[in-house]
Image 1 (cartoon, rainbow, N blue to C red):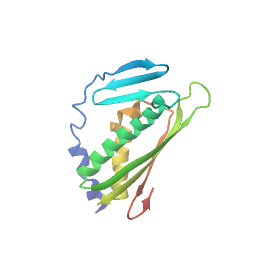
Image 2 (cartoon, rainbow, N blue to C red):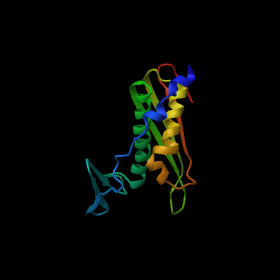
Image 3 (cartoon, rainbow, N blue to C red):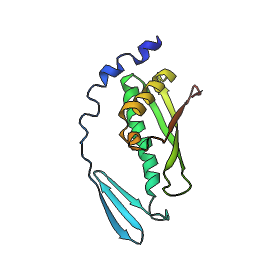
Image 4 (cartoon, one colour):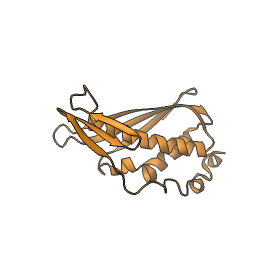
Length: 159
């Protein structure tokens, strides 16, 4: 039974992400003081190191890591016939104390609820994202560990 849960997933992912453009473009415009606006297709992001009129770039990097993983995981789980009713990721990053203040580690906790969700399916979806598909994680420093755990709401399975 457990093998059948993820059977055929690899085959169904052929072509996944092949239509993603190989070149990404965006614009960053200085607005005032230290406030900048990033513009990319479908999105505006305001940056402000004081966090009064926008976020800081490292915060959007954390959200981008979680967003990339989330898109992959939800896609893979749907292909495994999982019905998701809620999905949220808590994300935190531990920074190097001195410049460059890169992320020394990143930790994510997925909170998920729905039907047909099993630890085996989630483990497989997370593994595929981290090992092969999440381009944001693969853009990080190679010595930055990204730990992902989850809580399956409803049946309170934790990993």
